[in-house]
Length: 255
Length: 326
Image (cartoon, each protein chain N blue to C red):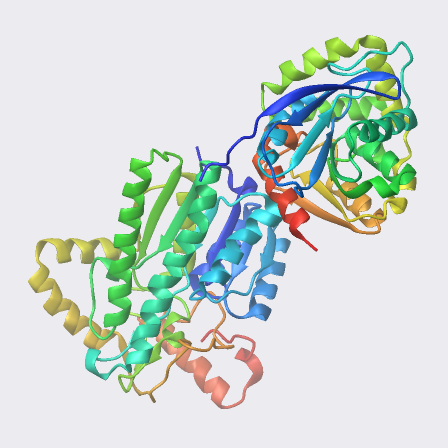
């Protein structure tokens, strides 16, 4: 009973003036199959969403965009801020004819989803925040950086190459800018405005998102619920996609 | 390579007392995530809190093991809430003491249903997820009577022979499927000190007790924990079990005569007992400990001590009233 992996295809579209690359599921699904948008995290791109996207593809219409500046998308000279990224995501939805969607993000991707849900709540059906950053009790670079280092041995080892490639594509100034943007975002003030059912997923070994912070995020969400997956860490979408997809499917089945 | 226990999601049926409870606590001590299943919700809730105090994660999932849909839901619950299912321990079992012809047939059938179909539904609920993950450990709590039978408990013995066969068949099918990281383990404990004998249905007219020698349930729990660390096809718990199994293999005729006598004399107390269906059809709210108070029934010193305690209780002396185990 192994799960079938669905195929993905590349798609380019112009949104908000930027040429945006999206990994789209290329599987025949029913017309009413839910739409799920995977939002990548810090500096990385949709490349590390591929394992999760492949498992979702047989049953959902999956879209995993590279936001401008990252992955295969256009690299504007201007470094986009969090609100600008959310606006671009919004325009990109128009361009892709996506009315509403379920959003799944990892790490900084969660901050982008929260920003979008606050600005355009009508476009977000449900949200899944996997490893939401940044723990407001440790909002400084040295601690966050050391936590990421502690996390790395818990992840699938091939992730390093995906990460290095995407970091190289983004370039150094953008890396610095992105980290600063993530650190400056007061996510705890926005969470109470996310009115849709939201699932917070934490890996029990995740040093970047401590249990206390995951619980605080869940509490701040009006319709939040928390699931902790034992034995996995921060980048579940890459290292343990089956586990992530299982809890996501259970969440999406709920009325 | 099996997952570390602290990263494992473990389902235990029959968790509310005896071996199931002892095993749940042993896993909790190592930080496991547990789904505790049995019929009595309140008992499970108490156990879940105990497990959390010990450092594990635990949720109570009241489940009737003869309800196939409920067993599927139990497995689904592990997947939905934790994304994984690493160990499934089929453990809920009941027993019936009676001469074969005197056992009420519905009681007889119920034993087979709980002890066989409960395990069948459990295995069928867990295996698809094991296959999807490519890993998992199915533990079937069998009994030494699955290899070395005894009289007066024909339904129970039949069920335990059946479970040993089930485990063997599954192991072979998994071998053919090259599912090398999915294990099926049979645990065969000898006589264990649990409330099992208080729970058992009894139509013999005599009060039952655990057959000597009796081993503590924690010994079985330890064996199960070791199986999860390093799976093996079959383990015996309690040294007496090895002797019985050897005897049965090499001198079956002699074994049968000796065991018949031993059970006839040693499995009962010199007390009359009214007919009872025990916990076959309804759970018993009493006797929810790990121990059934049998461990010392063979030791003269402990016997004397027990008499003192019993007398004290009958006289209404409060000194021993906190101890309900004897």
